[in-house]
Image 1 (tube, one colour):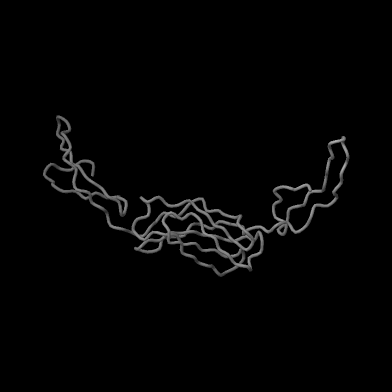
Image 2: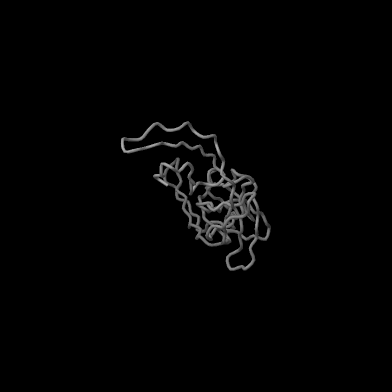
Length: 192
């Protein structure tokens, strides 16, 4: 409460964060003004609770063939709500009904890599990331779509032609490789 009756000698402070150390001071006031604050109380830590904040910026992609790389923004310490903090990662191929669950027991973790030879390149996965601590498991994030790693391009550019421009220069041209699930994104070409 903002103002406490002068005959009251205790108050309940609400809306504090779990598993955080606090110290308190009391200030007396009357119609003339506000007095000096008391000395700070001893530090008091609130009890732990199940975490309620989910990781943000869930994305991923990249990685090697047969890998699903999932990334997220780590949850700050003041929002972890207790000891034994870690992350829960659940994912499934788009259209599947069965979720795969992994536990990442590191507070600082911001990435999980799932490796499986059966993953085809650039396959979409539904991904959710949640948190847990010694008090229990919190809620999961909303679904994000993350693509598995790419494979190297399986076809060569077609229509390669060379034209002599000068005594020291040759212009080389080719038809670009169209994007598809099997070729992935072409980031560049090498001319040999």
